[in-house]
Image (cartoon, rainbow, N blue to C red; front, top):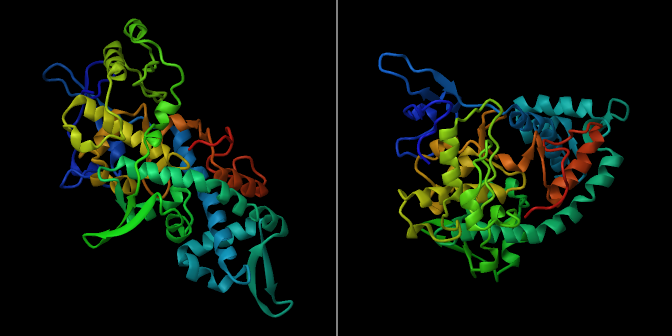
Length: 402
């Protein structure tokens, strides 16, 4: 699509390096994205008005809500990794660092329903933290959830490799987003090596790569296509009215969710309508076959980003994680600009520790709509906290989306 236009004729101001692009045009952190200016095109001599990137408070809240549950789940994992299934409080700093130690101590104190402190002055043993009996019973269900995750993880790993130009990815790239995919810590041994019919590890240019052994056309279907439902005919598409929310029921359309403060004019909506109707190559076709400047190839790049986010458990990745796929997925050099231009599909938030890109359609307010078995387990465990929003994505459906 051409440069973004809102209300009147609008255009994006020049994109400077502090706004997220490095010297090579790559994708850095989004530390300055909210300063990105969208300017009114006015008559000569008049100072253009500035528009700030529209914030979606419900999606910002997603990142805020996950902070405390993340601490609880991390502490649970640390405790379970100990031979005694307890952690001496004096060793907590070694595990999480001096600063974070106090956040974990506060969590231990606030949630006695999950954590219990044992030892101390009475029996003269050093104090330690362990899971409560109820927390232990629920934690035991995690192994069942992980068993249910195996076919999902295998399928999603194969799809990740199929999206790349050479059907291979650096192992360190997968490790960078392992938790977002739901992979176990030892996934190299516990998952990859168990499926030699699908995966092969090999070194290339001094880096360890994960290779796809066999292409499977049945997997070359995107999450967007799976959710399309019944297509309307091309004749009906031509006569379809232009929607005020930008949505269009065609085979090449994306689900759009404009922010509340976004008021596009008819000219902008007409352009969105044309873009929604435009066909484009599948993200699973090799990117080398297409010229990056082609409009259809640019729309395909949006589909690649959409599919990549769809393969994660919570439909979001940090800026650094997205950037790691730049060369293997042939992502746009001006990736930040691409994400901002398609703010009906993607949302960029600086809330939380890192800048994060969220797939908007996956959320209803602050709630993730569909959840995999591992997220369902985490919700069940966090429910011991005694609050409905025990996880960053509490509420919503619990059906599984691969």
